Image 1 (spheres, rainbow over the protein chains, first blue to last red):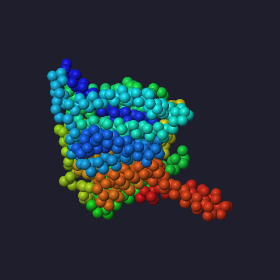
Image 2: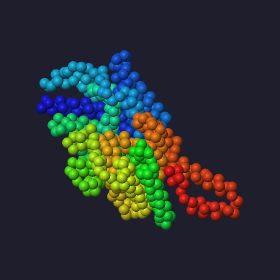
Image 3: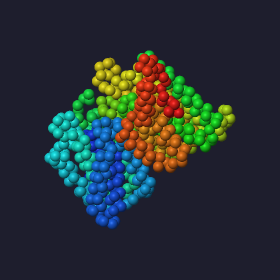
Image 4: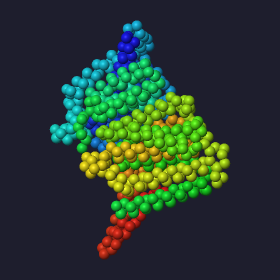
Length: 285
Length: 350
């Protein structure tokens, strides 16, 4: 029983990272209709800034720096590129794929694919008769409060409300003075910041390579399909589901097939609820 | 319909002449160093055209397209080498496997969901196939890849070297792909696909089911990709999981977008300018990928129609200039003259 609880705990750590990545993805998609394949690269950049700067200026400053940098990168990519293709899904896709190619290959050629160890806290804590890495617990403790914070932000702040309004009904939002292009900037900035936090979190629990963002992106895609594309609360639900299922499957079935569990989950969900668990049930016209 | 049929005949003639010329050039005249380059060119053109059939006609992006290409190569090579099957049945079975996989994935993915779900599901499926290849080292040798022994050491017809021999087969496959693309675009099926792309409720109201057409196109395209994989593997002599990875699909998509979506010659131009030309100039593979990314971003921002739309605009502009310089009485005859003129695109593609 205690082992089961620990496995669930590990699943939740993964789920909290997935939530952050998937939330950014789903927010930008909801507002601008762009499926941002380059989102994973924001995570990679965030993780690398934390790792490269932490030895010289300390972990917390490096984390802040990475959030700021990703925010700026997201804003620049929005102003320079994504702004022109808002609302056109295929062009947005092509644009994000182009940016993915540039960033990923630049990172690989510059930093190689050797795994790098982040500023990890070594040491274990005895929990329910099991050794749990301290870093995992800290990531969980830091990310869990972020979720209600995001929830509050989406419910109560002007930015959150405008993002939800634009993704619910672009036309109605525009009659109330919210231009999708401006709200799209909010979505990109927020998603950049979330990606940086996710990158910092993953850098402090496991060694990373420039491909870390792409792997996380695949999981985030699975999460948004499960939860419903464009639905922030669906992203949370999907992330918890995916994290727990993956972690249970790895322990009790076959550890080699870690990537496959999410996919099976997606196919099942598509059979039962094609729009995702919390997706909009409107008919497409 | 008549203009469609006329365009179909024209495009079929041009593409078969072009492929025949290219084939003759590779077999007889090209130096051996460039045979591989041209083989790669033909393979990627064929793949890009198949990708464009789904992207352009239906607005769906199959992010796992390269995975089907790799699956075709793997299945045929494994059947031929491990199970000692003859060549033709192993190719047929590999195409059948790819079609079945595509149907299994395509049906739930396009059924009642919006376009972006399809991109994600096929992306995840491609990753799953790579995982499968990596986790079955007994059959696939995992990430080490397989050496393809097919045809090596055997006495080949026409006394050709092995690369040149397979370039004939690649050219045949390229021709098949071109013919399928031309027929799909200029037939009743193409018109129906366009209606589905514009509005699915209208398609339903006209009495045909969009789900079947979308799944069907995805199956056809995946089967063609598998066929390309079957001839690619022996021509290169070595396959590993990196050919099926999503970066290959993204590159293909880049070629299509840069060349021009929904055109027959766009993929040809894209692959020629951004893959074969840099390789000819000796650019490294990373630099090449970054180049594709940069050009892709610039093209999408400045000219979403790609290079072919530029060519078309240029042609129209030239026609207008010609018309303006003529006396007024000649306008009608010059207009009919312009209609009957063959498309300028093939000359550009060459």
